[in-house]
Amino acid sequence: MAHKHFMCTHTFLGDEAKKMFEDASLDMTDRDMFAAVKTEKAEMLGHWRGEEDFFFCHWYAESEDDILENLEKVGFNSLMNTLPNEMFLYVSADNITDTTTRELLASKE
Image (cartoon, rainbow, N blue to C red):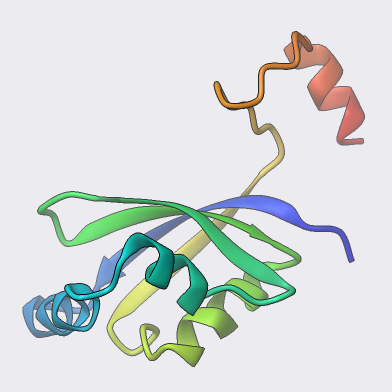
């Protein structure tokens, strides 16, 4: 099955869950964090987190279920709700292609 891009919104289940997540990840390097949730079916490509009770991650996965399975594997599903959204259009300054939005959308059909 082909991989697709997903943006996930993760929301902590409460202050205790947020602290447990922080405690579990404080001594992890960025490399450790990405490796911990990587499988053949899903991998996290980016992670954005502020001080709020929610944060965002960019995933490259076969399905939403594969993302949730990876989070379950590391015990994070019990700490947060996750809303994966497939992104049909993905462009990045790291990969300029000079392709129009019309062409990108047509290639997804």
